[in-house]
Amino acid sequence: MQVYSAEDLARRTVERRAVEAVIWGMPAVNFDLMYQAFVGIKGGPNQIAYWSRPLAWKNQTLTPNPDTIYFMPFYNTKDGPVVLDIPPEQVVGSMGKQKFELRGGKPVSVKLPAVDFIDDKEGKPIGIQKFIGRRPVLAFGNSDGDLQMLQWTAEGPGPRFMGLVHHTDAEREWAYDRTSHIGKLDKALDEARAKDWTIVDMKRDWKRVFAFE
Image (cartoon, rainbow, N blue to C red; front, side, top):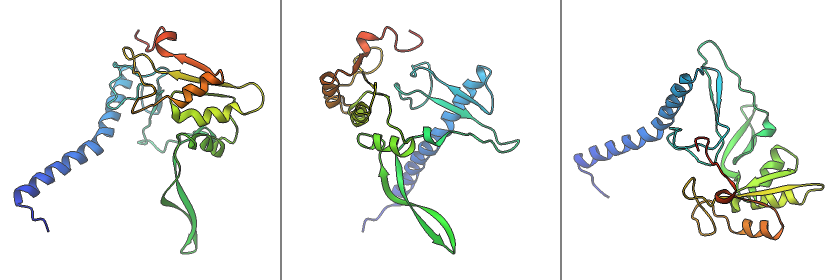
């Protein structure tokens, strides 16, 4: 059994507290910074900030995703409860398994330590069908993680649109392709070319990527 000295325990305690401070503190700091910026443009509580374009360096979010459209509600429950109504059929995401039980004669839904589906690859069409219940007529993707969703969209009846955004601009945004460790675009790119889906080349086709350009 390993024995730790008082100095080792003190150091490990400091390290653990530092990690916990980052894990728990980053969301709070991020939220406050975003709210202060929102107030600076005459926003206020119980309003929603919406970015219609991908984030650029001017956005000081601590962990931004440069190819995601963000919206952020700022609600205040000081004067009473606030209800944010989002239609359930418009929310799709990864999900854990649940089961129904009777506990003490009362019905409960129990979250299990197991994954129902991951909203990536083959999980994307499953999630769309499960929550929206309709096959898309238009689908866009930017990696092999979107291929199954595009295939499923393409097989529907009537006119369909399948598109890929090919991130080729390393100077203005971020380039990832067949050999990338993240956002790999390989099989989907081959199938898009073979089946004549729309491919948007960011470097060639986009005169402007961010609003400040």
